[in-house]
Length: 362
Ligand code: UD1
Ligand code: UDP
Image 1 (cartoon, helix red, strand yellow):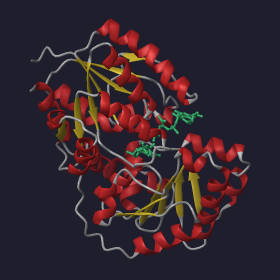
Image 2 (cartoon, rainbow, N blue to C red; image 1 turned 180 degrees about the vertical axis):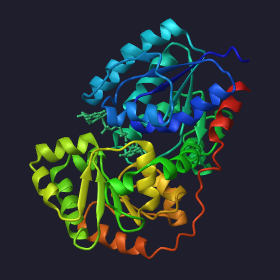
Image 3 (cartoon, helix red, strand yellow; image 1 turned 120 degrees about the vertical axis):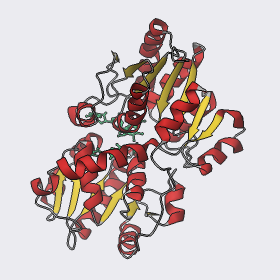
């Protein structure tokens, strides 16, 4: 069984983070694997910094895909990764999440008759306008092993007619990554002193969803709301490169930089980000992974979207859907600030990577 040939494929910041526990587990059990990086994310602070923070070995293959339209990114990945698979001939390919890298990889593999394992399967926002929703649905339907983080995500898959023999509830590897790295972050990260902030005296904000930042009207309204909130609260905002680019294109950069009490910074590494999360009094975000981490770290979250594929966080009360308008965001902030932090997160106990590898070996 130890001769199983596995290719682990990643391409973006959240995939690097969420696959890191799986890579550690494969290494611990001396199981051979190759690491393929599509290069969808490529800037140091979106890519290499995580290899350093999480002590991930260098990839065996770097495809250098980079930015582009959906068609370009998906098409280029499909062509390049097929070549890597033809050379490597893996028995199984592991992907995580819902990006263009993930869908293109799964499609290339399945057409070559290689088994596909999809980690974080079964998430649904039920919003087909989201590119990620298309990637999720398509990837799930061509995968052979579907590692669903919760029973809710398993039910989504069964409802779509996916064979229950293919579906395994494993928890989410983000719990493994968070629990392992939070201790290191608490010790090592100096981000609070670097930014002259202290526990519970700031909100943490992230924004990168195409539906928010590629739309001028929405981005303007969100920034206006942040400006209002900054009259009362300090906000730390590590800005995603997509957002920085759009702020510039929409001529909003100068206004944002002038907002008093808003600390806009470049994206930070995982240890610094965990430290910022756990010490924040509130998190405002449109990120998927950050909704989960906020829930795990017991920090109230306000989601700047109209839906979420993480509905478990809403049900247990760690998160609220606030949309993108000033009124709903402000109401959401006040509601979540009053919240008693009594929830128990639904994403597992931090042994998801072990469960996934056990299932693969079986
Ligand atoms: C992608 C995923 C999204 C995921 C996010 C994680 C898709 C369709 N979207 O969105 O689901 O939540 O990654 O962060 O796959 N850029 C850089 N440096 C980088 C990466 C991006 O400057 O390292 C800039 C480029 O201008 C690029 C833009 O950001 O055009 C968008 O990058 P892209 O990978 O296309 O999409 P994300 O918004 O990062
Ligand atoms: N993150 C980080 N530094 C940052 C912002 C986010 O390390 O400046 C981490 C965060 O801890 C989470 C992941 O990036 O694990 C989320 O990635 P992102 O929001 O880009 O993507 P999504 O989860 O929405 O797909």
